[in-house]
Amino acid sequence: MPFITSWARLPNELKDLIFGYLSLSDIISFANVSLPFRFFAIKFMRHRLTQLIEPYRLPLYTLLLVLDRTNSVISGSLALELVHPTGLNPNNLDIFCPNQEADDLCGFLTTKGYFQVPDDPVLPLIIDDVQGHNSIEAVRTLRHLDTDATIHIVVSTSSSALAPVFASHSTFVMNFISAAGIYSCYPSLTEQNKGMRIVTDNVVDTQPRRQLDQAKYLQRGFSYIEDCSPLSATTPHTYSERCLHYTRTVTDPITAVFPFDIFCSSCSFWPKTEWRSGCRLELRSGEIVTAESLIQVYCDGDHHWMHGNNLGRMSLQQRTILSTLTASSST
Image (cartoon, rainbow, N blue to C red):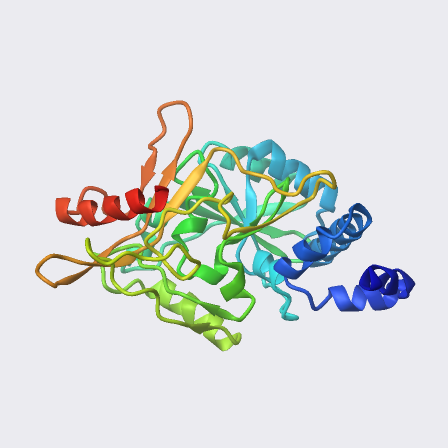
């Protein structure tokens, strides 16, 4: 009660200044105090998002509308700056879209002064350029005629725009903005400028572009921590943000979700998309192996429901270890 009274007495300028330092988890806690607090938090976060997208000449209402119509999301540096403000000005806007919505999304942006920039392949091709790798079917680059602002359209191999997000190189870029709200999949670690590397390919040791992306975030003050210990059939793991072995969803207790609807305390995303990040397993022989990331999409139609770089390469023993973990977590 004293906090509510003291907050009400603060001038709006000081309130805005305080909120400018808060990460998403803090804002969610603030919004849960009361309905007026939630209204203030939503108003501020929409304003913060408006400021971040200002260079792209896209009004917030228009951007949220096109995200809703194409079932797309904003991710990358801009989403990270929204959930964990550091003062960084993102160099571009990354929009992730389902594979069947790319043409409509690019067509809409051309009506807003953008033109598509041809992406000439750089030879020799590297593993990052393989179509379908890391759940990315293609990346289209668009540039504004007047401002040179750049938008990347990351086309998913799936009917879910989230598949490439969950195949990211690090946990601290697994944040996204939908038409319904803001999501951070590893909030506690991200808000400490920490994260874990994600293994999406256990056949190719080196993915040059991912290494460059990881180095970029190290320069921005982020650091990597070790993931949890290898999982074996006899060693149980605790369900936590630092455990990469468990299957995750955007509606699980770990993900921080901030809806734009004042009367909702959470929101989901369609189609339902789950992920299990690349993790280490200990076989009966004592050998430590790596199981790469898997993304599962639940939807109608004939779209592939399981996404990964080397599907079918997981041995029966590895599957058995992971299945015992799933069984223990559901009891």
